[in-house]
Image 1 (cartoon, helix red, strand yellow):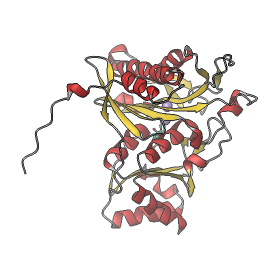
Image 2 (cartoon, rainbow, N blue to C red; image 1 turned 90 degrees about the vertical axis):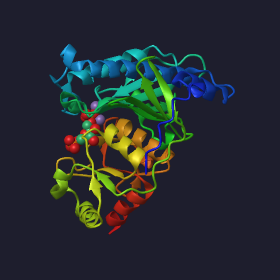
Image 3 (cartoon, protein in one colour; image 1 turned 120 degrees about the horizontal axis):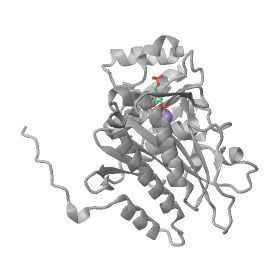
Image 4 (cartoon, rainbow, N blue to C red; image 1 turned 60 degrees about the vertical axis):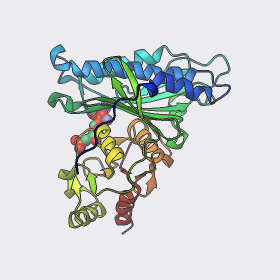
Length: 335
Ligand code: AHG
Ligand code: MN
Ligand code: MN
């Protein structure tokens, strides 16, 4: 069948992320704009990070910095640049009380609240999959927004909230194009950066994840060290005609699952018995997006968003994606 011609951009419906957020704010009488202001800081920071990633080879900022982050992982130069960019853009936003990042051991208390408004907390993985940069592979930024409970004794205590409490979550994928996928708890919206005008433009409202697709995404080289139930799932998937895709950047892999369906997993391994991914700024925001798009997200047999966190940098295993595909994995975990 001849392919359909691509429809031209509908300039009558052009909607930037700023316009989208302001229109959303209008629907909530009493909204003060602080939340919108925080999301716009993330938009600005990620546009800057996208540009730095694109110029990384030319600016000679590829490769490792020679330092380790709090989790003993080698920091890439761009991990640090991305972190500083987000901290600097978010730091000036009055509605933000606390920021916490993969690259900083401690959460940062920006301000103790003043004017009666309930302030927010932002958690982020500034650059996910950063080792992909050396090979011009996709990387991303992941963020999670919580409300600050002023009764908390310390920033650590304030951020210890389960993923169900997130008021917004999203990621930005720096690939052939720069894509922002965002939820504020009312479905999932997708924006693409138009570099010619410097704006994220709305390209899809209410993104829905396909119900099923025979694709799994995990680091299959670790199979021998996965718990047996995962090995049985993989044997079943091999017999059932599945395909696999894995880029080494969670943002890129989950984005593909969101668009095309399938299941993304990082099971417990011998090296990382609790899983490798971080609950607060990797698993939880991605789990919220996947659920808001109609999919499922689990850590073992527990819904990821219901895990009661103990620490900012705690790790978890993850199984997330199309509902039917997550169910196939859970069926194997139940035995
Ligand atoms: P980060 O670069 O922020 O440390 O995250 C890397 C993560 C995640 O993006 C990816 O899914 C996973 O690590 C890949 O780990 P393996 O190399 O062990 O498969
Ligand atoms: Mn990461
Ligand atoms: Mn990272």
